[in-house]
Image 1 (tube, rainbow, N blue to C red):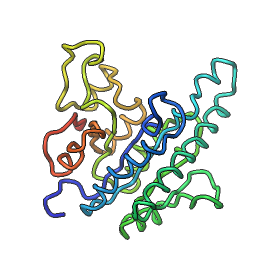
Image 2: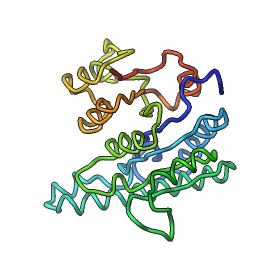
Image 3: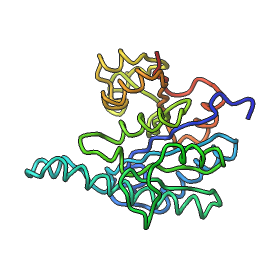
Length: 238
């Protein structure tokens, strides 16, 4: 562990990461693939926490476009994150990785209530901790939940897992000449409106000097190399 740059990380996953080609639902093979990546990191001795979105199960915008109350739509999204959290927990436990799901909304039958000191203790004991139900409040995204939880548990970095190898100045799928940034500061991300995380999450990370590393989780070498401090993906910092 002495050769690793980060001791404690928070991994931010989109809900779509758990879905199949359709982008909807929970695909067991995709969940198992992510669990294997998390297990590899955990095996190095790094303490791992996870926040997952719910875009594979519920898109609040669809409800809002039909006149749904915003708070109701957001609470439905929080429930979706719990389904994703439980599916990842199951895959990790089957891979023999001790895991705890902690929920910002009390639902004791399936998860522990989120308590900061208990979460840190789980990490210290070598358990992967999955934070569900966002912040527990409507009007906040899971990006903001990731930044908040990472700050609370004193993580060294937020790792934003995507299917591209960093942050570009335009969509690399549409523009073959798109430029990838190796490093950005928080203000650049906000001013350029780059789609790293939402502005609330970026501001929270900036205020607490918490770096964000954007990388391709589906590149088998990216995460292990990033943990060793190699230049991978895009680092957003001060």
